[in-house]
Image (cartoon, rainbow over all chains, first blue to last red; front, side):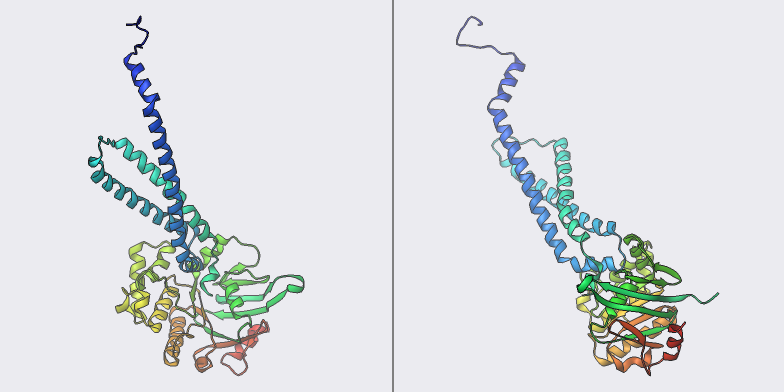
Length: 147
Length: 244
């Protein structure tokens, strides 16, 4: 077969590499790009939600500071809110996936490792998203509760 | 050894701005409040009453002078915000014109949160909150949200919150301004009872001259100067304290 000019031979590993480096690799990169973009957009949206929720609570936060609540308590409240939101999003996403994936033309395999990785990313997004709200809360002066 | 005072301020002065924008909001304000004593602070708007409360409440540092609360000198030089905040949550109670309850917590949770902030276990803080609300006559409303309470009930919950950390000093800024005269008088009498029962010093900023007989001592403030009010209860005692 090596003598045939219009045919190339590949080993099993070679065939796998050819597939992965070709159209599959391009699709993989595109999906990765979408995922990165979605992650950034999710973080920004979540940060804005947490920030808005914090703005709504500036008076109680000032009051807590006035009665002596330490900073870590206030940081904890905002972080907790963000993490709960992240956990809910993860749960809802997982349940939607369970319903949607069987409708896909190809089988979608989600392993436990994938779920753990996604959970880690959601945790990171939640922490990052809370930073803007925490920054705002830290700038509130206790005497704002009096005015 | 002399008795421990709930509050002693010495030469408190607060200056805002500098140069030709300098405003002296309070000048050499000295006051002594014994434990179990209730003191009124009168004066027109802009006289410096709120500045005095903010300095005494360890919220705004004075430019000069010292503040001792429960025998502990707290404002005589730079202190960390964390120190001041810890002292506030452990030793000072605050009550304001508006009830200032946390809107998304029930009445009992509003009181309980103070106990939890000073490190009490949740169940202990809850029990004390329930006891205080009961003692102040709002026990049956413990599970209601602030919006479900009347103005008087909200103010009672605020008083319970101010008492939750067993403070040496309670600072009340026009606590009856939003109440009618009957409710206002009841709240003032409640302060007196609280001061006497709990041995807490209470300073009440008020415009209500009708309830002055409730107070052990009355001060007035004008243009940043603090002095005992003429003809009011406790003036002689206050005068001697000031002249020391």
